[in-house]
Image 1 (spheres, rainbow, N blue to C red):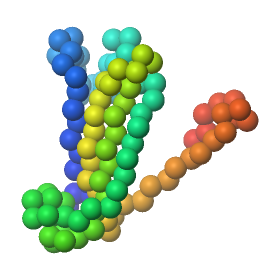
Image 2 (image 1 turned 90 degrees about the horizontal axis):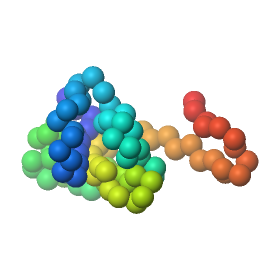
Image 3 (image 1 turned 180 degrees about the vertical axis):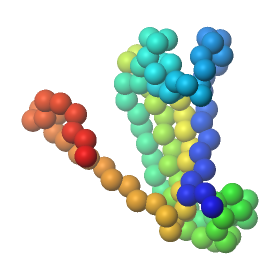
Image 4 (image 1 turned 45 degrees about the vertical axis):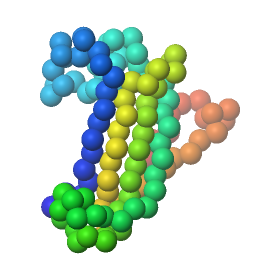
Length: 110
């Protein structure tokens, strides 16, 4: 039973087929192409599963789900990826670490 389903959309880039996406992460490939991810905008909203989404996630129609839509941009503000993910409402938990960049010198991970 799936916890989420995700669809990724990429701009047309002729050089992408030269990389083995099973061995390299998408963001590592963009780094090599000199378009590293610089920032992203992500929206999340509560939705209700229709019949098709319910079947994909293994939940009944009408079940609560969470929709996440993210667009990632390079340093020049060019979109390099758009991702749409649906999460089951009964099996998701999100942790967000917030930092004040003027007070934190390095990345904070836990």
